Image (cartoon, rainbow, N blue to C red; front, side, top):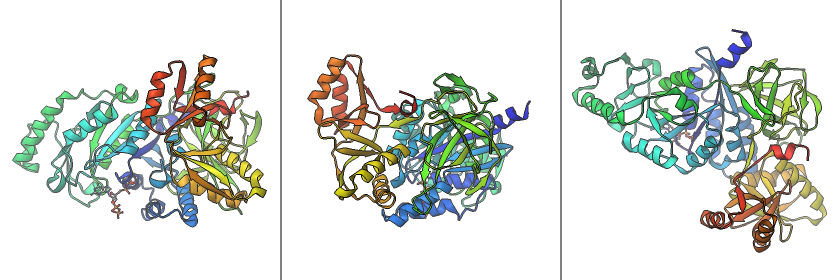
Length: 533
Ligand code: G4P
């Protein structure tokens, strides 16, 4: 096999999604430990310690610095090249969190066994579903007393509406947690808290009627395990194609804190998770082994420090080999651009790279040319699709506090929205700018950056809306009529598309039902902004 194909097949580019506190950071650290890539006390822990911080500006800056370092963590494990893409949570939850999921090939979802599925997991799952992203589930904190395994599985199936397939099964939980039976590798793994995984006993047991089982976990637990294994026959046997098509989620149990069940998860992950696959463009699919380089920008990280105005654009390589110093076509402007110092992210370190393969994420230094959704190619004039703007949930109007600086404010707002920091709308009734975000921290970031980078002063006033969707119709009379009747709830986005704002999910659902001629969309393709009009 050509070396290029081997490189593609080696890659596993994925994101870990979870509700805050379910254990994403802890699990990431354990993965890095297995890959031999960590300084545990480094950036990831630091991120944790700042995340509850108030929205003090220095904290924002610090947090942003750290989040660049942990945006992509690459490491090698068992001859695979693994790229973990961070999906920020907590206060730093923002559109980047969603958009990062467009750059991954699969996802690991962490669920807290004591709490089951929580709000943020729902939201992230919706985004995964848009691209049928394959998902492996890790049920964490089995060292704590919580819901029964069957209850957690029922909870996942019913609230996330995805069939599950257990690939490991816990033996007890909380104080009586004894370990897991790894169904995938047919091994019994015995639990000892706070030990390194290699210190856990792993015993090959292919037949559960083997008397060895009882000798390890005792008669009662062995009996219970046999009963449970019988009970879980109700779940369909594991089928890798169903997993790869996003139709079922294989489930593992463990405790990230105790480094238990993590190796089983990682070993199965590298076995079954997909390597980079073909991706959609405006001109059909492009296969990763297409020799011509192509990739897209899914995130831009601006430096908040006015002395260093450079930005880093994160590019996902989709096909061919990216080479340093080579000129590529920036499809939106059809200009050639060259990256002198492209960086790769290995754990927390940034290193300059000479080449990158499909599945890799590279950082390109940018002086303002690149936008989220942009495609770079070796010559084809195509755009990658499926990099959406997501419907925001928090809305505030912007009041200018310095009439002499209204131009700066307008420019700042427009540029920040192009960077993807937040979405900018103008209300139809009074042309008032409205900022829409999916996370609260974004408002502090915007205010700080407007002040420091554009010398503009503003104040935000909250609006009661919680939902926004793009509206269109093939019936112009129906659309005009709706816009006229709802004029206080209509705004336009930066490309002039109509947006409908509502206060509750319920009122939006009512409109969707009543306005049969109007199409309501919860995402809008970023690429529409970049295509020539
Ligand atoms: P997040 O990134 O998803 O927000 O979660 P994170 O890993 O930060 O974990 C949240 C809390 O849950 C942490 O406790 C962490 O130690 C704990 N935790 C993670 N995995 C397990 C587990 O398997 N069992 C138990 N019992 N706890 C677990 P904390 O008190 O918030 O932080 P720390 O002081 O322990 O660092």
